[in-house]
Length: 283
Image (cartoon, rainbow, N blue to C red; front, side):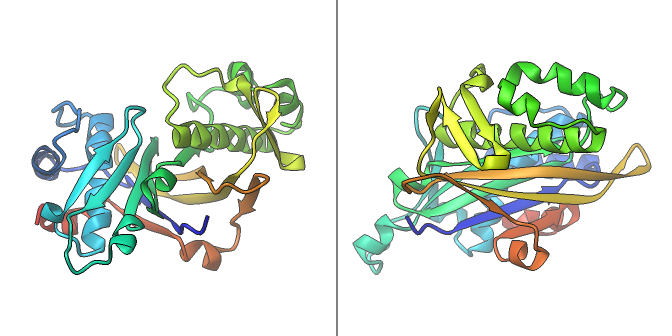
């Protein structure tokens, strides 16, 4: 299944001003009627939730498609796909393959959106997982944090974490991001038992309910930037994973470590760039 994947990652590198928040909120109210957000100026997470709803608008604006020319559809399991308005000049087969499936995810200061273009039944099977490479809360030890997450891991996964704090945290966040990406791709609701999935990363084997998971592609990469919080600058690093069902005989991992290769399908932007284009998103 040759459907290209594109990912947009937005760093929430600073807080929105009251004026910026108001403009973002009003844009969502006008352009995203299905949005379920609270109006809470000054609330960091609510501001991030608002920006998350702007991501599809940002992507379609980049494609130079006016808001009135496309519709955001949602399946019963919450999976989204975008359909452009009928164009008499577009070939019917090409139009059938022009649908865009997407998924938006967030952890702390990073908002991501993965998108795929193709047929509707194909493009809805995309999901994104994001994990900040840190303990939660930040003052918790790595060993205590890892133990608090053991209920999401199989024994094989726990045994693969290692002994050094840096290695434990990196491997734990990778496994959690992979599980999140898959569950988001299939539209699984909150409350799913994470131990039903097993990612044997060293051997690149994946199991669901004890059976090999076939047909999936998992792209894995990291991102880092400097974030301004409470007048302080902090360096933050994130583990990201994108899952997409391609129908292959087996599942496979794609490890994206080369920056040049990553730039070909992952685009990073920040709040300032969003605010610059914000007035045009409703056009």
